[in-house]
Length: 394
Ligand SMILES: *Cc1c(COP(=O)(O)O)cnc(C)c1O
Image (cartoon, rainbow, N blue to C red; front, side):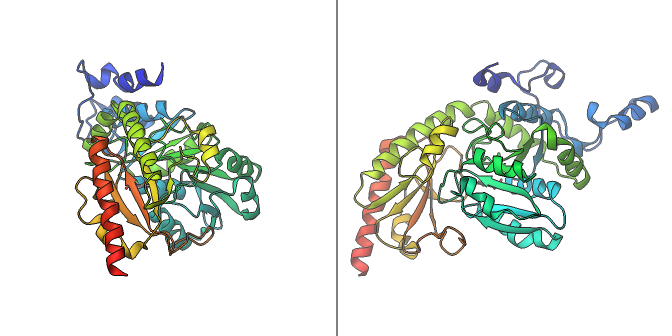
């Protein structure tokens, strides 16, 4: 089946839907066994059917079947209550005391916090590497490096990573590669397992749910690591609410059309911003000004609606006039919903390997499904407010 057909049909097994189009929300803790023999059968093979709510219901299975099918090269997947839980859960499943982990300097902030500050308590050591290192990452490997995290493009700064090159080096050192593929939107924009990753982690909270109203994470693994992840996920008790799984499945059905619109509108706004006198640089992977653009062209099948804008004037502290008074681009963290968002960000204090110049004001934009004329009007007024405030303040 082609991808668009999969999006419409996958996960709708008759035994899960009972003849309606969508699998319903199965809310369950207890699942009842008919008799002693059925109880014994279930104990021998708990994954054969309903066993206990924590191991999932047809609502969860339908979503997982779809997510695994979309992330080409994936064998099995698990749901988590958030994207961050999927990431931390995957790392804990694959690492042990004494191991060393490599994390890109451009990683999602909470990922950075977990790996730098929490993992050391378990005897797991993290060091950060240049997201643009490519094969040069070999210099960062130690004798106990067991895992490399990739996140492409990077959070806030959008460096596109050479995942195939990094995966080749990792393989040569006997290390695994875990990818945060959230920007890649459930595998639709980036088939990161085919690029060499062993596990693809998604914050389904973003584009899969797509409506800013649920938290959910997923990890999709290649067959070689599926056993380790399955054992760990069940042993540690990760699970997700059936209502959230259902919202994600509902979102997935329209993911492709939404993404196409986000992509087109974000590119239109990004190109328009490039022409604005207030803008220094646009960090959009599909534009040549983005670090790693040539890798994006090689490895990605499209772009989503999230990108960065570097302003010519002002610092992070001077962005109040710009963001206060926005009509459509509102401030908030989670992106991937239908609405536009703006976030003033400052990567400078957290970077340790590839420094971000502190004097540069950076905005993260998510372009939603509104009319682009209205969005441009909102942004133009914001950029003018910003310049006026700087002129007034100097
Ligand atoms: C939002 C995000 C996460 C975390 O997902 P939550 O569902 O918010 O926990 C992880 N990685 C990236 C790149 C994200 O943008």
